[in-house]
Length: 383
Image 1 (cartoon, helix red, strand yellow):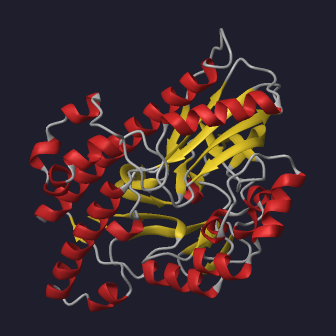
Image 2 (cartoon, one colour):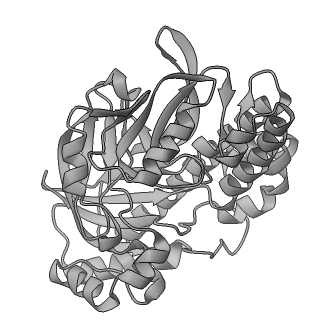
């Protein structure tokens, strides 16, 4: 970790100039408490960079949470100790039958306890997207989300799921960012509107409405991921009998939560970063084709008890389409023996070479986490 500017701490040794400028913009927010924390997976994004952790007192900023509210990762250890290539192909085939990916939705409404929350009838955006959400729950979506079968160095077969809130999070983020921009213009905070960092102060109705919508969206994202977990288990059980599973390790990485830091209650924003309180388990995935890790947190207060949510992008999605080679990325995956979905130019957006070196990312946050289990990819599904 190093201090790269006033009120900015970076766990990335080489943040680019755009990231640094975005961090400087965040550091100007009048509600800031402590430092802007940059995780090693950091990459530029709308307003605040992905991989940013910030505490604000009595205010929230939608673009410091991001559009995929409640996006997260689940990792499950199975009792299986081996799986051959044919069995792997069969499991992947059944998963594809059970779980819609990309823009695909469920064929019918899904009944789930999460839809019993009264917010679906009362909240502006959640009520508007209630019926769509009932068909999007349990679907994988796109933008780097994945289902991966892995072999752990603990001798077990694992599976990992990275999924989010589908369209719901995007709609909440955009709606309340627009509300925040209008309020900031009234208060002459034009600089923050220009930098896409408009905020909602405590005391405004929009502050409480955003938090209520965000929390329900997080519950939806968790429920959706849990449904995917169940469907993957069903797929495994069509091939294997008497499989058992350890408890689901599940974390989220785009949200804001009230926590106590510096002797006061503050709103901690984690965008592309996860909670890492001392002795809690976490998950840090690499790109497809590279290792992922189950970790245990050290509880570093300087990072607001946070760590990265993954490897992080090295180049943008558009750059990946023009700079990377389909043949080379396919050859890379084939050489390491991973069943993959790199077939056309759009698949290059999530190809291994579009992401940072996970080993470097892990090295840069040694003071935040310890590695418990290393997971080797065997097969991956991406939209």
